[in-house]
Image 1: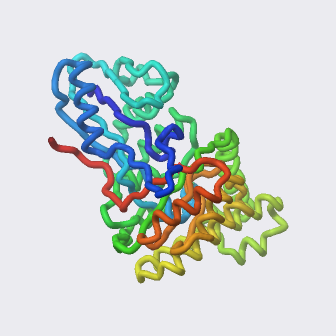
Image 2 (image 1 turned 60 degrees about the horizontal axis):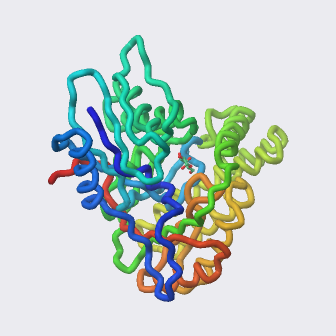
Length: 376
Ligand code: GLA
């Protein structure tokens, strides 16, 4: 195969995107699948002198609730976004892989070629960094079979090629997302259930703080270790097995910080189950309250928020028509997610931007499909 990824993971939207300073606020509209496909086909033709034989897309995601629970075997509730990565390619017979990205944010070089891995010779991570995600998947792919195994291969690629000891949420939602639904994922059993999210009066607003603190890369693995240590100290396999009462009872066995980290995780798993139930019965107020509790817990107990994210959440919560708002993803910058009445969207964006000391970028997306083959 010679895939040509057209965009990096849209999970961390590029801070160079269009800004929203106009008096009538509009969400930024990055290119969607059709546009990206045309661009990828054109780049492929220019590079290889032929039409690609295959095209696929995979979505970005936003996590509605259930933060830092996936690597604790807990519950998460993400939805797939309409923002996608498109990849086109064709098989080749000479055992080589040629890659080309058209992403403006990718580091150089944007083209590279290497031999397919064999039993004797593995691929190694290196530069350019954008290619590590692709190389990692190629290296681990022969181990995959069912859908869950494919997600695990992609997770493995992220661990060993991108150096992030992430959970399984991003990969599962990218594969299993379904239009009009959020996905409740049990990260212990890998069972998933679709939760309807297609009420036209409801909007999901993603606000990029456009900050990313360098802390993120070292603090994420540290949080993961702290959680594992607390579970071990309590004689459990993971924090999923721990109830709040047990944690309280075992307080003396763990550090003060470890206790607070675990209190977030244990509470967040419970909140995620409650939030999925609230969404099922259309109780958006209850959902919103749980989002706010989640944010406070991430800020105070888990300590993965930052002043910019806190400011964005506070701003959203003081706007009309908002049910709830919270930081989303790993933290230390990145995005917030806000659930609101759709008719208030531009007012809410305007309000947030006025209150925010930085420059925010807004994204609106319906819950979309997971990875799929594209046809033209
Ligand atoms: C990152 C990781 C996910 C998850 C979130 C926090 O996005 O990639 O696996 O752990 O952080 O919920």
